[in-house]
Length: 362
Image 1: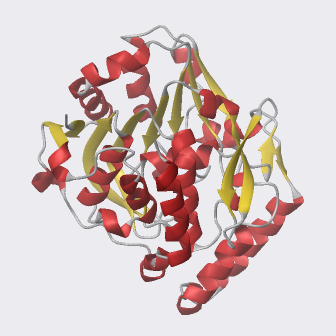
Image 2: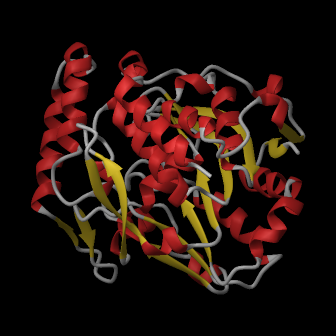
Image 3: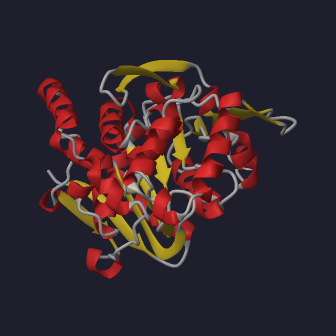
């Protein structure tokens, strides 16, 4: 049976998402019999509205859910370097708990940890901390913005869920006073990032410097988000390895205004005016990537997940429903300046690790 992915095009963000969910309502209905629902937006940073999930996209999902279930809903994320509560405040999220019954906000960085296993750059086992709320959730909804990326080419539903659920201790803020607090490692990373961005583009975008940056940020301080970054080949392996613990049960992609170029934080706006949704997260991500001009074989972590059979990925196995055809909305997104460097994710040693895991996949 084909996996269904809704594809909606329209001139209003909120209506697009509602229509995308309506188109797969029969697929979602069995998932709603849970004691709590996790809605995970993308709040990658506090200070660039284009890079984060618009609050009206969250409202659309909450509207749709509240018409069908009274289960408590937690809207939660964990930012990488800034404060999650500051990101909530700056992007208009704090009113959601008052607007909707039984809805609360949560910082996944402050959650009780669950230990998950990944790899370091030498392919040795490395323990990571993930949010217990996210790992234990029986209905994880990834509400993401389609964006190009500086390390893995493209970020969609799966990566949004995984990265936000991993715990970072690099910064925090008092949710009542708004006072920010940064750890020493957070200050070091902020300073190093500033020096990296000050380099001439030709040097900054070289394979050597980009790889050094990845390994530096991946091995400083108490951040499991950062620790996933162990060089271009290994981050794809780590995302694949973590997918079985943190995959979305429902993916909603708000492409009303997407991002191309130097994403996930500093790219350029794409007025795309679409929304996608599916209970097959791989089908949703692969479909969106293809609409953005990326072949599955280019995106390492999605390719590994396809090999593992985590969802539908062949076009013949994906049924598109909605009011738009791929031909109407397909466009080639401008790639990150590091696009050529990112293409070097293939590694025989990493592939062997993937094959070992494929052998143990049920």
